[in-house]
Length: 450
Image 1 (cartoon, rainbow, N blue to C red):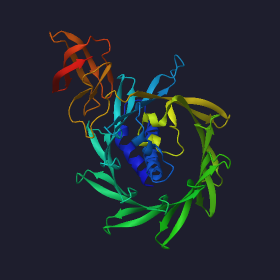
Image 2: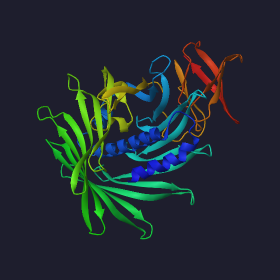
Image 3: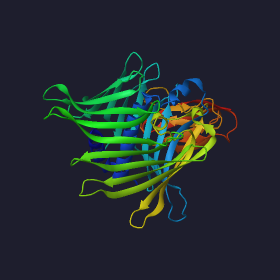
Image 4: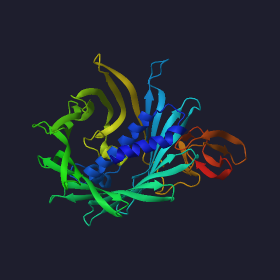
């Protein structure tokens, strides 16, 4: 219930300032996706299903994911090149994601507008310490919206997560929910219990829990969701997420969600997996039913197909944890594209409605940032060879970037938005002067181009 409340409030805040293609339903989708995947990351980081974290410490990565862009079909050319939304990622020196920006493309302004961003912090051992999510508000600045913090036990297992909401009336964060985790003797996740803060009682009150069962040496089998009934002081199981495998290779076949109401179990969602000839996951299909009526009604059928570069394995990549630590794992190799399809239910016709492209850069290409919020202009790498990048706090306003030779002759004068890269590969090697300006803020310096 909390995540749906979060989605409704966030949409209410930002829908009045969105002048681009993104509609409320699209924002709701990305919010649900981001938050749901984060919960999956927390769940599977605490089980034997995760292997990427171990690989990060033993394998030197080659590429890092800088952004992914969703495209619609161009009605004039039929090409999938009409920009829609963009997710941008930045990492710290340990290759942990510290900044996520969600932007929408404006055809009228011909530029990206930031709608949401998330800044993450880490303990010295690399464990996630917490994050703050911001939304771009009607006051033309980033406003704190939600915050989460994480605590671990002596075995570095996740022990508690605390969720906060920003309250404008007191200009401070208010704790709203607390989740506690417990484990089996083999350290697999046994249960998580969520409590909500009751202001009148000034205490935490138990609300829900998830119980986990496993099969075949540690593969997750069932997740039973229960709500606490205060009247009867007992637990009511109302949802079962069932992981089904084939019994030969134990590849995940499907994930089905059942909901219990009116004294009966109803199937409300099924996610089926597809594999290539080498048993690598390469797609999935999701079927949803409306189960609130007299009988279940099919409401949607969607499919996703992934395109890969199989020359680059997962351990060679730096990727945000919410993409790499989910189960099932689509990032077994470098993902270069994803095609999204919808089924027209009346005609049973499948049509493509969007495509997603993934953009990478070399790890030694210095697009990483320090684990802090950017409060001033930052130009990097310096020295530079092919590209330079600019970081600055107000990502919704472009900066003017000027480059001069040592005699003062201007080399170029361009507008740059946050996370864009500027091509300097055609400029002769040497020492240059630069000026960065945004409104009344101005900064100058020197840069070496090799």
